[in-house]
Image (cartoon, rainbow, N blue to C red):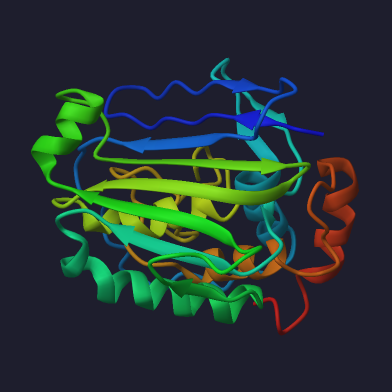
Length: 251
C-alpha cells in the first residue's frame, strides 16, 4: 500500500494535513522561529511503563490531522542501510553534527546510517541541505519554516527523506532527523512537559531539547525493534510496544 503524510510546524498555531491516497509516501515537517525552551531544573524521570508507551504512541503511531485531533497511523521506518547526503553552502559547518547523529542512529536502530556523497545500491537516502537563511526564505517565504523535512516510502518502508535547514538553526537537526526516520508527529498536548523531554516538542515548549533525550532514544529503539515490522497498524503495534518497554535494551 502506498501512502502520503504531511506535517508543518510554524510560529503561529500549527496546521497539519494528512491524506492516504494511492501515491508515493510523503511526510513533511517544517519549523519557524520561536522562543527558546525553558530548562528543567530537576533531572527528568527515565521512560518506563505506561508513560513510555504513551510517548511512543504519540510520536510514532498517531499523526496530527490538522482537524484538532490525532489520527491512527502505522509503523513507518527504514528497513535497510541509509546514506546521508549532506549538501549546501553551509554543509561543512554541520558535518560533525550530522556525523554524530548518524552514529547515534546506527547504534540505536541496528541499521547503518552513514554520511556519503552517494548511496550504495539498494540503500535508502536522507538528503540534508544546509541553506543560508536568505535562501531558506526564498524557498519557503519570509516568515516561513526555518527547517523542513519530507519522507517517501511504500507500505511503511521508508526509502527516501529530505531535510532543509537554515544555517542559523542547526538545532533543528535532531528534530528533523526523527521525522526523517519515521516519527510523523510532534510531542504536544497535556503529556508533553519538561519531565518528559523530546527533540520533537515544539521549539517554544519547556519539553523541547536540542539533542535526543532518553525518551527519544527509547522511542527510536522501539520503532526499529525487529518485532515491530514496517506497516504494522497502530492497533496491532500497541500490544507489541507494551511488551517491549520494560526490556533493558530498549531504555
